[in-house]
Image 1 (cartoon, rainbow, N blue to C red):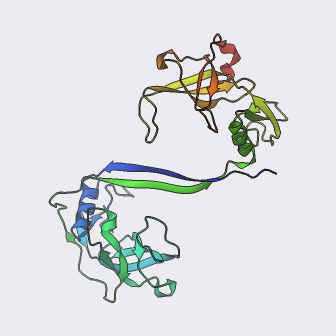
Image 2 (image 1 turned 90 degrees about the vertical axis):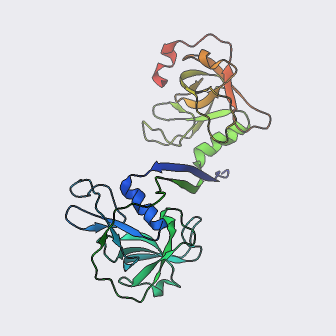
Image 3 (image 1 turned 135 degrees about the vertical axis):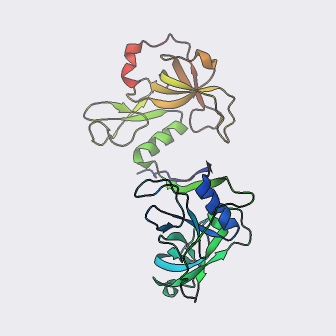
Length: 315
């Protein structure tokens, strides 16, 4: 049996969001080593603060300052920190109810080992040396020997100089992808400039790219069928936004292409024709670059357009 392919992949993008008055005050407060919560309709204090009451949906604006000390309500040990996590050495994820708050804040606890962590233990904030107005201004929590504060949280107007009004969070997912038996064969065939799908033994439809099973009948597909190489544009879109790390002149066309002999349309870029002349029914063929393992794009074959009735089921 041929080796099934696999490859490490990364999905990464910067997520930018603006902050309302409550979140702005909370994050700016962290920069100033001040922890703010908000009072709910029934008088409870939520940290982190939210803009609307989770029970009544009332708008919340009554900010209060709570202590930077608190109590662990629950925890889990993290023996192998990942990239971007608060600490580079093993630590505990903890929910901490800060003194003066009625809800818990999730963060990291710097502890020598799981035996040093208990529910109910006292902790305090360890502030980051450089603070910018983000949750990472709390570097982590650390064990604390003091008692809980008895004072009521003090009202706070939420006003700070140079308030933080927006944040950029880097979202990233690292994973290993395996296309499985069917798509491994499909990808290997593309390297030989052939397009190979699989036929359902029940309904006899040919799927390209193959998924290993018929989505209609639910049975395994094992009969391999070579299709194309030419095909028909069933539908398309004109792309006007440049993708990062993709050096293609705008605008360009991305289309669904039903290869001859296939019962499922695949995706491909259309080139070799002005973008405003691409149309449904256009007959196209793949173009490989030197050493390419898959078609770089599809171009017109020069044949007459396909009749709509021949591809309407694939639109």
